[in-house]
Length: 267
Length: 287
Image (cartoon, rainbow over all chains, first blue to last red; front, side):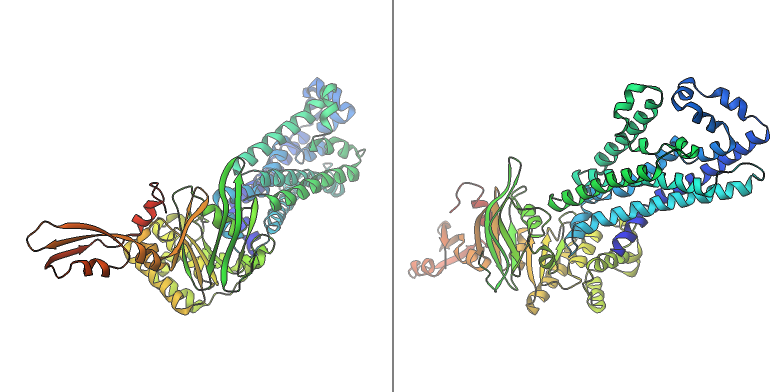
């Protein structure tokens, strides 16, 4: 397992490093901006800039975004962050499809390696990458708070940041399971990656549109992002444990399907 | 399936359909231990499909196969533990050098590689230290093929499956490959299943061949048998007369006896060519 895992991480090292650095930098940038707005007492004006549909959809929680604390936490659920985390999960989880397409699976499975080991390897690589992403985000926030001198500003507590990161990690884990499952059905990496990427974007859009458009809420429960109600987490009224459980259970179901499919398919 | 102890590879009624397309159908054959078996056929005949079934990369629609008595599907791990495999299109990790590539592959299932034997193979296939360090994406096709052959042989597996092993090799390396097979043959511990389009290579290295066409085995025979029974064209010139052309199957003795004391000025026997034998099965004159 270790050589497989090491090879997987080595192959994806540039993507991994790039995404981790972007996530780290993103936290720095968002703290720099939040600190600047806070210093110029301009958060009241930010509140006025919030689109009406969001104010209606999110209610009083929308105003959390117009605070220093809310803006800093925004770095944990900003669309760019969600996309980067999804890309990272998808990149590592779709490796079985790449191996089938490139014929690498012939070399690996011509040796005495059980098939399930390739699925487990990709799962572990994706989970490790997600863990790396959340750690880098946490480090980025801590570094940003020091670099941009947020003394006296209401930084989100460590507990709140941990909850948000755990919830984001669970979204990533759910997408990992989905990507892994799609990869075990596909013969081409581009097919699995594009399919999962489009599905993730659509899921994000569905959840976002559901904020302001009630009919969309009937299907929003299908989106993994529905179980990451970040503003509710910030407000302290989200069933985070339940949400994380739903995401992990869905991810586990996808992973089980991936094991089953990879075991039975022709590679 | 019978489990003959002298068979290294056995296939019994092996069948694989890809939807409506027949990959192979009712393929049965045996390869003896220590034998070099040439598996021949045109493109799309089912050679690679058969190999991938032996490696459990494809799952059979019907029938079964075994390697050294281990079922290729039900006891897949034990079966694959005994195989060294060179794919027809060698996949590479472009960021790895040959040395790391070989080290990675040998680390996958923990089969021990004798460093002395690996050095011997690297030397025989003329893979220098510099070649071993260079990334595979920068290597020529021939060099990658040599690395492919080495990775298949380095653990000294009892069964080696080679798909088009000499594709892209220069004549010197083809010779090195033949010498390697000859050494393995001499040691007698290795069974080689070789799929190739290069019939001269098959003729010079294989003990026996199996010919597959349209997914079915249409002929299987030893090279000696084929050579003995091959129809050869003999051109005989008597005295000053015009040359006479005779097609002979089997030994030349009866023909020579039929000369009946006539003075033979010249006699030319067309050498045996495996492709003539193979061609019969593709031109409608199959026996």
